[in-house]
Length: 133
Image (tube, rainbow, N blue to C red; front, top):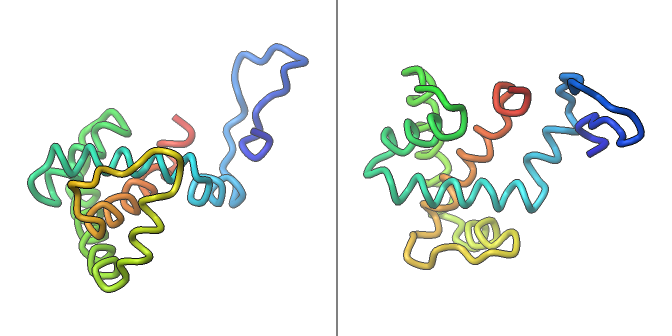
């Protein structure tokens, strides 16, 4: 919690200081718990949405508790497409990503699709409005 400037338990703190540092981003992007959380979010998005746009809209609304702007949906869908292409060409990398953490990924989902949406979820969870709000 030191990376997130969490207050110590020695004093009462009513409000935590808002910070955003490169170290926080590295933890959020690479820590197995955050990667696993992103995978679970991706699994739910894939199951709830039929296409990239509906998945992006659902994911954004779920994570940030507000509707996405058109540019957000467009960028998330485009990122999913780019990640999908990368992971379709590198199945071993996709498998390694989706098996991060202790829980088992849904075997019924395509590994490249799940890996792509895991990366989109991970990116979404690194936004300032997610971390600090």
